[in-house]
Amino acid sequence: MKVLTGFDAEVHSIRLPLDFILSEDRRVQQRQRFVGFRDSAIFHRLWDLCGVIRVTPNRARLTKEEDQALQKFCDEYDKLPWRPLISHPHVSELESDDLSCLVPTARDLYSLMQKRHDKPWWKRIFEK
Figure 1 (tube, one colour):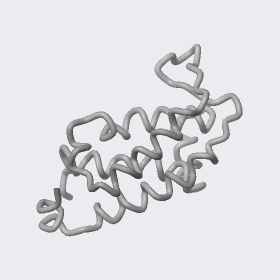
Figure 2 (figure 1 turned 90 degrees about the vertical axis):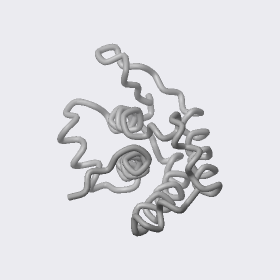
Figure 3 (figure 1 turned 180 degrees about the vertical axis):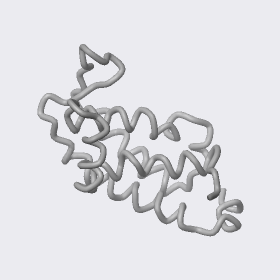
Figure 4 (figure 1 turned 135 degrees about the horizontal axis):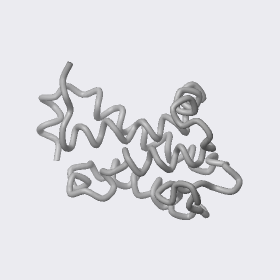
């Protein structure tokens, strides 16, 4: 099994929180790992841990289309009224627990990240 590092790891890992939004099966799996947390809190933590490409120098290696999709998703995410949990101040949740406004941009970004990840390694190294 190949161990992903750097850019490849960031592109691969960003799909975990996006998949949480898009797949009920993934939500069920993550709820078992984050017992007692609401969906929005679980997503917030996953995004904080796995969406790091948005703030690293590796973001510059995204294609224009990928970067625009990431920015659109981040803009929607940042508009939401997140409130920190008293018991876990590094995790926030939404009062409504409704993540549906993120679905369209999550779907677009996930699709692009999946396409990039599915390319052979030798094609990925020559991109950007």
